[in-house]
Image (tube, rainbow, N blue to C red; front, side):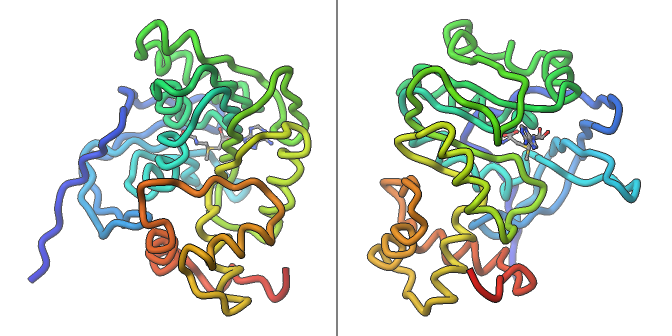
Length: 250
Ligand SMILES: C[S@@+](CC[C@H](N)C(=O)[O-])C[C@H]1O[C@@H](n2cnc3c(N)ncnc32)[C@H](O)[C@@H]1O
């Protein structure tokens, strides 16, 4: 018999409260079973989610404190240094945890939706950080595809998508990279992108294979240190790769 453990995130989770503004809502679910990005299913207590009403009227989850969402972003927050540009405020989780990293000097967050920014302000999400950490954060209301920074960017962390994968992700990240000229990039879903390109080209997922795939992207993607990245990519792909999302050609 399998036992299921309680998820205990090792990074900061701000306190949120349920709120609804225009199409956006923050909800809190007392107990829910969630599959991680690379970890097995875990029970999540008081899971917070940011939802938006979609075109068909149904609520869609844009961000949550589930292990899938946090594991798929934490390597970027942990590896960040210097000036980080985060595309997409969402729940402010990645912004807060990147700013909490002592190696980070400045976090610029670009968010185009004033309602999202209003919710974060109303709930005092970033005000929960120590003053010196808050001082690192600069909020820009604007379009991630248009934003051009006024100072050098060490790490670009785009997370503006509802879905983990799409066929234009590399081009979209490439557009943001062309505008920001970052030293490194860690984008949401990059493990899926690496895995599906490796699979399509019959490249084995080991260190050399990951390097080969990334080199083919022509983007300075972050390869996190101190973890078995090929193994994590393989686990994430096993859990989340959906053949519907495999493009016929790249
Ligand atoms: C998945 S959420 C980000 C979650 C965030 N990483 C976190 O840790 O809470 C995506 C966010 O990107 C925003 N967004 C979507 N498209 C955008 C664009 N073109 N420019 C700026 N922000 C955008 C959405 O309004 C949403 O707030």
